[in-house]
Every structure is written in structure tokens, then in C-alpha cells.
Length: 253
Length: 253
DNA sequence: AAGTCGATATCGCCA
DNA sequence: TGGCGATGTCGACTT
Image (cartoon, rainbow over all chains, first blue to last red; front, side, top):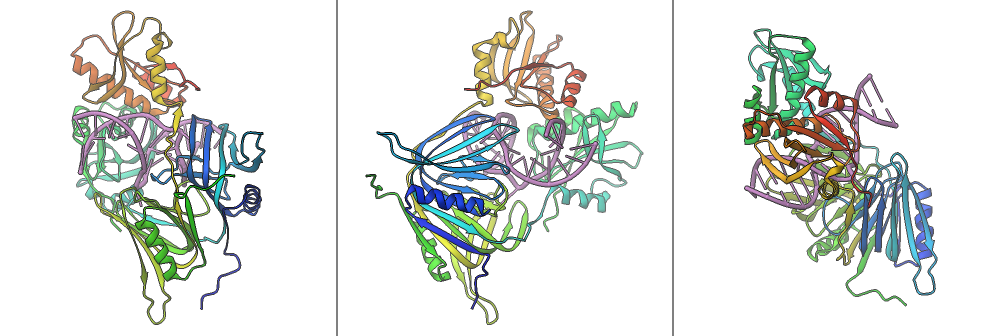
């Protein structure tokens, strides 16, 4: 039978008193565990922007790297959050004569100065998760994979294309692939892993412009956008600026 | 004393057998609750790209809107996920002679076709959260707020500026603010809530180009980028293209 | 359903 | 640390 290793543990409190919740949370955070709280709370944020969220039942997760996430029952993104590197504090707010006590979870950082405060009036569950995760994810189908594919078989772009550099620097930024065509003309290639809109065309145009100035060339620099497909508007913009399009996808595996 | 309303409930299983976990999860999902699982699992994804994640302890959340999130103990973003609108299924994978049973959580959708599979070999906690959250968040400090600020006090942009339209359509997209200066020249304003780089300059240039063609005007269209600040490279690009910059921030509150 | 663009975007890389 | 661009970006809004 499978035995649980001693370094994988979960502690759960159901409907704890606020003081018990505070103690368990503070202990879990100090022990670098992942902790969660579910309960009735309000949320205030102030930093790059400011937000307020009235009372409701939410799920809060604090990670040992300083991340905090507040999730409602809808949406993929947290309704409020704080990025890795924050400091978490947990304390009880003493109730005045006519107010109830509250459990206050606060997360702050500097650069930029930001503060998130979650105030619980009722805690339904507190959990402390201690586990191990040595594995890292492997992802296939990225722009990087598309680049490798073209560098391996440059003819996929067009017959006679010769890659000369990747990430070639220009005054406007780094070009994905820089090379020359069979006639020796300079070619700028911008890669996108998926269907592209106007922004990708602008990006390519920026690089072509910059390279033409940089090379001080009289001959025009060719610009080729490589993506699975383009939108109508992007296609029009490409024509308007004398840029080209080649349909290619990242390898599926 | 505060009494918990009957619609706010939490059910927790600690170290359940896989079959008990399956039943509780399936029941919670069918009852439109938010459910979480913590345990040792592998994760496979196939859709817009493909990913694999080996065995480790992770926290999985399924929301009633079809969202699924897989969190490790690091990072703000889930290591794997599926957006709202997916279908969740939970089932036991029967173990072969030399393999253990597993609890398999699968989430699929179409358009695009995507599948996420989380396979648990050990479950340390299953929770079912039923709560209420009627409140919606209020956020201040967005680009929209910056736009309102300028429309209220156009002189903030420059003396004599007159806004004529917001979201004015051009062949290259919609212009944030379209107006004219004290001399009657057409002005395109692009707004950004924070410090901008080259992409914002390209965007503004796209609109100015499109509007000049669209207006069939001999007189040039002025382009003004409004943001708290610009990077060096963006500043250079602005000069290169005869575009202007005005420093303004969204209102703090 | 697809296009377009903002976002407290986040994240990783590199100077 | 800031600049820069990719992202399985997400999400809101419009067509």
C-alpha cells in the first residue's frame, strides 16, 4: 500500500474561530507552506491601480513565494491578487463596540508600492498544504518551436532563403530571424505562433524601417510575417506597407 | 451571534480513498459548487499547444463556470488551466496488475478543441465550497479613467484642444480620442495608463497613417501619445515619426 | 464566432 | 532593475 511521505501533509480547520484561523495561517506561512482560506470577506487593493470589493464568499490562496490570489466562483483570473515577492501578514482586527472581529490578511510589496488587504468576517475553512513538486512543465507549440522549424528547413519560408542571425539587434528592437533571399536581399522575419492582427504587422514594419535606416541601404529590406494566418485588416496593412506573409504553424509535437 | 446562512457550506475530506474523492468531486461539480483537490498528480494538456507535467503535489480548483486551475507552490499563474465554459468529468482509472488506481479529472472544450487531464495517484484533501458572492469589483486607475479625465479637461492635453470623438473608426482600428487643435488640425490621441514602449508608438503611427489616407488630407495629422512616461527607445521612435508625447496619469482615485 | 485592444496583465530573458 | 516581447495570454466589447 502507498504510504504518504512525511513531507506531504495537509492540515484543515473547519469553521475555526478567527483567532484559531489566524494562528494556523501565520504558522503555515512562516513554515513556507501553501495556505488557503475560504470565507466571507471584503478586499481592498491599492497600487498600480485601486480596487474595492464588497462582502462575499471567496477562496484565498497564499503561496510560499509571496503570491496571493483571491478567487470568486467565476472566471479564470483571480478577482484580486498580488505577485510573487510580497510579504504576508495575518492579524485579528479587534471589534469595536458595534462591530465584529475580523481576520485581516495583508500582502505588501515595494517597486511598485502595492498593498492588498483581505478582511474576513467569517472563516469556513483554513488549510495548510505542505508538499513537494520537483517537476517542471514541458511545453510544445511555441514561437520558439516555430523558429527552430524554419532554421532547420529554411526553404519552408521560401526557396533559397538563408538565415544569418536570430534576435538580430536593430534600433527598434531584436528581429526574430534575419537573413537574405536567393537574390541577396536583406530579409526580416517576424514569427507568431498563432493567427495575427494589426499589432504584429506594426511590429514587423518597425523592424524593417529600423533596419533600412541602420543599413543605410538604398535597396529596400524585405519584411515577411510568418504565422498560421492573418486577419483581414492585418492583411490590408501588410499590402499597404509592402510587407509579405507566409503561412506556417509551430510543430504540433 | 453570527449564524451561517444555509447557502454557505464547506465539505472537506482528508486523505479520502480515490473512490470517495471521485464521488464527492462529481457531486460537487454537478451541484455547481466550487471544488478543490490537493494531491500527487500528473498533468497533460493538448490544444492550442501541448504540455506535460510529471508527478508532484498540486492544488486543483474547478469552478462552476467550467474553469479549472492547477497551481503549484510557485507563481501567480496556474501551471495548467482551462478557461470558463469547459466540461469537467471525474472518473477512476482502473489499475492494471502492476499499476495503482488513479483519479482522473478531465476538462474539455471545443473552439478551439482543447483537453486537460489531471491524474491523481494520491488525494490528500477534497473540498466542496458552496457560497454566495453578489458583489462586483470596482476598479480605478484604468485607461478609461484617463480618457474621462482628458475629455473633462481637454486643456490637460494642450491649450485649445477640442475632442471630437472617442473610439473613432479608421481602417487601422479605433482611435482613443480624435479631435482638433487650436489651429484646426486633426489630432489623434493614443492613451496608455502606464509607461510605454515601442509598441504604443507603432500603434499611434498606424492610426495617424490610416487617418491621413482616410481624410485624403494634404495637411498632416498630428499624433499625440499620452502616458505617464516613455522609454528611451519609444521616445526616439516618436521623434523619428514626427509624433508627440504628453505626460499624464490616470486619476489616482 | 471572430476581430480588436486593454490589463494591477504575468513571465522570462537580457543588457 | 528596467526594457522588451511572448503568452495555451484573459477578458470585455463590437461586429
